[in-house]
Image 1: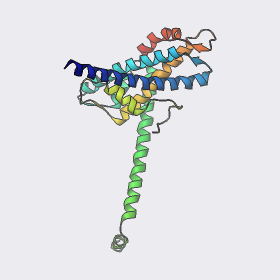
Image 2: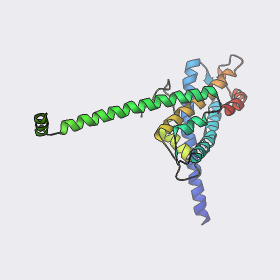
Image 3: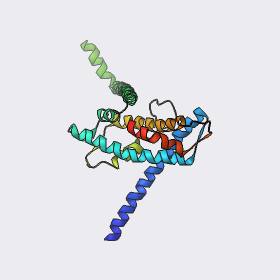
Image 4: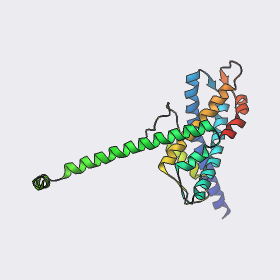
Amino acid sequence: MESEAEAEEQQEFSYQQRLKAAVHYTVGCLCNEVALDKEVQFSKQTIAAISEVTFRQCEHFAKDLEMFARHAKRSTISTEDVKLLARRSNSLLKYITEKNEEIAQLNQEQKAKKKKKLENETKNSIEPEDTEVMESEN
Amino acid sequence: MEEPGGGGGGGFRKELVSRLLNLHFRDQKTKVSRDALQLMVEFLRIFVVAAVRGVRQAQAEDLDIVDVEQLEKVLPQLLLDF
C-alpha cells in the first residue's frame, strides 16, 4: 500500500518537474529576446530564478482565478477573472484590457472567416436543380 | 500554433499555461475559457518580461551580465505589482 502512495507522489513530483522545465525553457526564450534587444546577457542563475518565481506565482494566479470564478458562481474562469487578477497595477490592468480586446477581435474575425467558408461550402454542395427551382420561384 | 501579436517570438504555449493552472485548482470542475486562457498567456508573458526588464534596470553599472543580485532588488516590487 505504501509503495502505491509513494509511486503516485513520485509521478506527481516528476510531472511538476516537467512543467517547471517547460516554464524554464519559455523563460529562457523570453530572456533571449530581451537580451538580443538590449545587448546584455542573463546568467543561468537569473533565468532559473525568474523561472522558479514564475512557476510559484502560477499557483497564486490559479487559486485566485478559481476563487474569482466561484465568487461569481461560475465554474469556468472567464476573461473578467483574469482582468481582476491584473488589478494591482494600473499599467498592467490597461495592458491586459487592451490584450483582451485584441484577442476578442481576432477570435471574432476567425469566426467570421469560418462561417463564410462554411457558407461557401454549403452553397457549392447544393444541387443545380434546386437553384433552378429557387430562381423560378423568384 | 500561431499566437496573436505580443511583438516577438517568445511566449507561453496555451497547453503549458492550461496545465500550470489546472495543477493548482482545488475543484475538479474548474475550467478555463478559451479567451481567458489566451489572456493568461499574455499575462504570464508580461510577468516574465517585467521581471527581466526590472532586472536590467536594477543594473546600476554597465555590466554585460545580469545576475541574481539584480533580481533580488526587483522581486519585492514585482510581486506587489502582480
